[in-house]
Length: 133
Image (cartoon, rainbow, N blue to C red; front, side, top):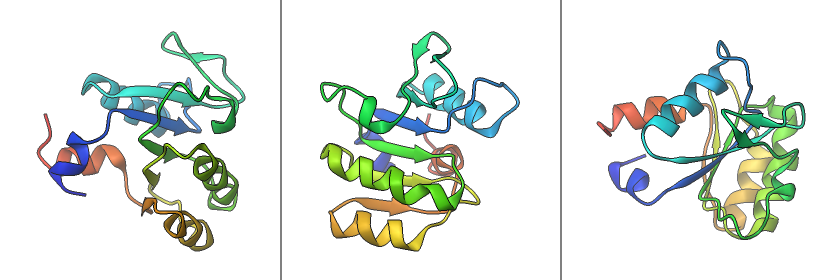
């Protein structure tokens, strides 16, 4: 992803965001929050993350909250369902699958609906590599 990508996104829904500080999802979310992004936690096992309300699924996020990127911290076999929910929302522009997460079928489905897809790469690393502040 280039610098332009990061200048065009504001709100990131993080699916699988953990409330445990030692988890990668927590660290990535904390970093992105510190860089000015709006984080929407999605995890049925928590009610909030850093006082931000968490949603059970993407479908539970109210439509008046616009999502630019869905960042997925889930096993690859669960990705297709998440992508299908993102496509239904009609506001998501990018699906981002974190390191270790790949689902070709979900990628093809998302791309066939006009979404950009990144697989098996960390959003925080991409941000840092692009020299973002």
